[in-house]
Amino acid sequence: MNLDNIKKVYFSGIGGIGVSALARFFRSKKIEVFGSDLAHSEITSALENTGMKIFYSQVPENIDDSIDLVVFSSAVPADNPELVRARELNIPQKSYFEILGDISRDFETITISGTNGKSTTTAMIASILIDAEKDPTVIVGSTFSRLDNNFRAGDSNLFVVEGCEYRGHMLLLHPKTIILTNIEEDHLDFYKDINHIVQTFQQYINSLKDADNLLVYNNDDVNIRKLTLPDCKKISFGLINGADVWANNIRKIHCKQIFNVYYEEQDLGEFELSVPGNFNIYNALSAIACSLGMNIPIGRIKDSLREYTGIWRRFEIVKNDEIAIISDYAHHPTAVQATIEAAKEFFPGRRLVVIFQPHQHDRTKKLFDDFIENFSLPDVVIMPEIFEVRGREELNTDISSKDLVEAIKKANPEKQIFYAKDLSAAVEKANSLIIEKDVVLVMGAGDVYKICPDINLKK
Image (cartoon, rainbow, N blue to C red):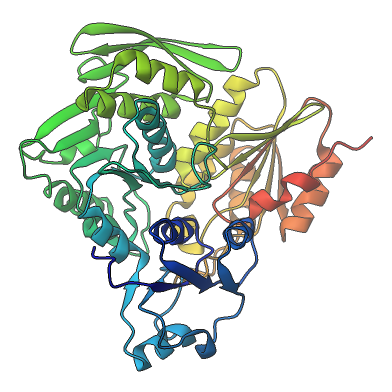
């Protein structure tokens, strides 16, 4: 992407986790950046602290002919007053994903894609590359202590970024390396079914046409096995012998996971993680496989993964004294189940209270039966109303969290399961039930994380 002629960029929807990282990218190139969002947040405050001007209303007056480019979030509709005004002034407009695609052409781009694990895997790979002095540019869909919030400006030609499958957006990217974590049913407001999803991922990996391109893929995933793999360098990973990189002898000891890794039958020795769950072992294996494909020394990979402590809202332990409070982004049934299991593993013998905010009506209805199966392990479940995603056309709005609660109660009559009309009601219910040593797991991709400071043990 030729940035020479761009002096001023306006971001409509600048408070999004990805868009805000892109704003930081342009600022790192000494380009003037400002934008708008409909709500104050931690993200917008952090941007304002860098000197960016942010408007909290989206009106035509925000746009003038001094702007060289308008970038908009996928949550911003085409009839947004800012976008309408930009069209009237003939200012070029591009979506967040289109700009990412343009930028990816200029780098040796590593994209991390799949239904679950994208942000964690991106952060793990970024850590390894930073420790190996590869100096990558990084955009991650969360905040991470080793980056400038969710972005890192590097001086090398490496670019590490998530390739989101929503509406096939990853097809806009131009990767040299693709990492596939897993493929499951999701975003069924766009995809027809799992076959449509697999076909789209097939189109995506078909872009790896050169012999020096690299595909790193989960050999244990049944839907990835349906793909016809391209004629490029390939490294598979998994927990089952048969993958190129695989783990065994897994031990879970004192909030750590220790496991041996093999690469083409060679024992690479013990690896250690301070984040829980087999899903994080899969994430680590994908990062290991990618790093091996880039000839990074084993010792450097081990050290980096051992020091990795996680990212915002990915099993983030926000409190651990009289009670433990964990904030997690999980919103797909598989991720929800895995996160609950991880909490049980890391805090054995302790009562588990889950506060889960379903994300999007359409997902809740189409994956309803899968969600019901998720809640047999927790001792207490509190479910506030479904989070409605701004900017997405909501289908199946006749579904409520109350429907899910009733179905879970029927399947688990011995459990304490409660519906909450909103987040305030969820906090009130939680605080009335929590006892000392409880583990409170706050899950969802919406705004449920904001209640964590309000959850307290009654004295």
